[in-house]
Length: 98
Image 1 (cartoon, one colour):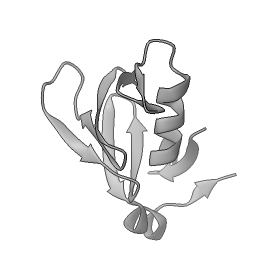
Image 2 (cartoon, helix red, strand yellow):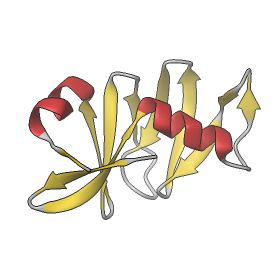
Image 3 (tube, rainbow, N blue to C red):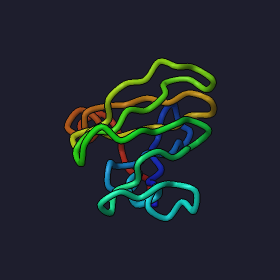
């Protein structure tokens, strides 16, 4: 599902919007409405539906603060840290490990 990239010479996971939505759809406790996951957890963070092209994701564990995540973004997970980058910036900066 996710891709591994090199950051400071160590691989970390990166996920596209479609990969996150597919994860949410496969999640047995996620409510699906019109085929889209409404609310689910990913890497111990809550993800909530805004519309078919936008979800809100908690930026830190146990935090109420969230940021939007769209098909133009990539999520990177490094230990307890979660980063959201534009896909364009991501592709210019990081190399996908095969």
